[in-house]
Length: 168
Image (cartoon, rainbow, N blue to C red; front, side):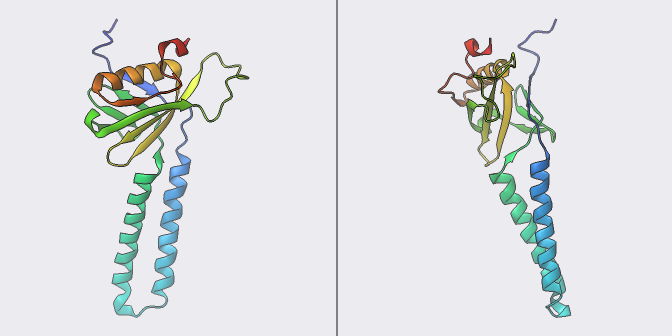
């Protein structure tokens, strides 16, 4: 049996959906291509490379803005010396995580839920502007809170979703 201090903890997102982000990036690409196509039909031949470069720069800027402002879809996170997100295997040192907040699961009403496991939403904010939202079990919320406390990360949980008594 492995020691819990040497094994990285994996927290699973119980409602992982990658398609909203994919749709946003596809729409941004189509808008930039349509704009470039429209401009290319009106400009002189000598300006075509400038229009193409401008549309690429615009797309890159819009993607950068969307990456910073939209929550990222993550299937799971691994907690160890760093917080790793999957897919993508991005590693965030604890010093780059500004705070972790817990709140009610927006998709469930616990009063009428027949599920034996209670879920809550975990929101992780990174100092570079990225945000991750996960729907986690109460036990995973307690493990995430414990990891954040050990690493000196601010935890906001006014309703006690990450407390050990809520995981029963």
